[in-house]
Length: 209
Image (cartoon, rainbow, N blue to C red; front, top):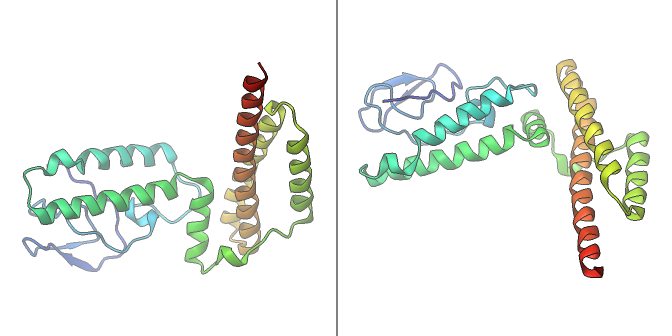
């Protein structure tokens, strides 16, 4: 039976709920009897067996995610006990939530910073350049009759900010990392606002045609 070891929090022993075999780390399945295990309290990174760092291999993450989806597919548990069905459902939910966080540039950064005790509800952008940029962005979007150039520019700035964020995480500068995360979050929202404006412009063209 295929096994995926998706997390190793530490070297403390866990025990299988079915056969009671002790094993190191945290597994989806017991290494001895191959029975699905209950979920453990893990960070999104640990759930996928990753070091807690911002710069992760997203393609490798996706491959692991798809493999886990196959292994935890409901069809694999049709003839299993209710308890195993419950655990598989819970594991699927936890793995899905962790994947959604890890694949997202902003949510991944927030998850790392929250482990450092950062509360983003209390944080605001205070970089004058970014604040001015946001005001100019809003004015340009309000006046735009075509969103193409705005979208191209915003996507470039978003990609550049991801690169900057990787650097400040490596430098372990907490305040710079918080500010870059907030900037990236703003740019993500701005890109969504551009999409909304594009949709409204198309609707206006359709209505007037």
